[in-house]
Length: 48
Image 1 (spheres, rainbow, N blue to C red):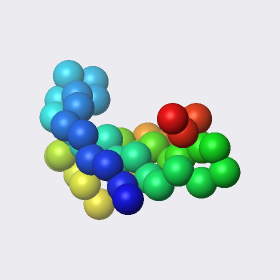
Image 2: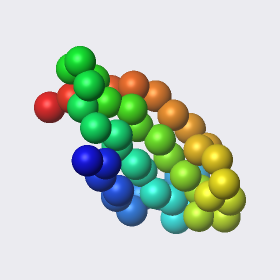
Image 3: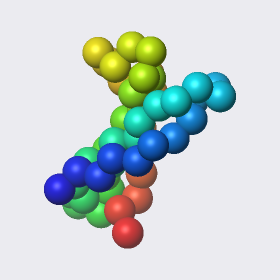
């Protein structure tokens, strides 16, 4: 399933959410703790 990791975004607390691997990649979304309503950043990364 998805993985959640505590990270920092511009020095502030945030959460990195890694989606399920699909077709050799997975979606990575970063949510700011100040405004968790929508991702502050997102991208696709290779699945390992």
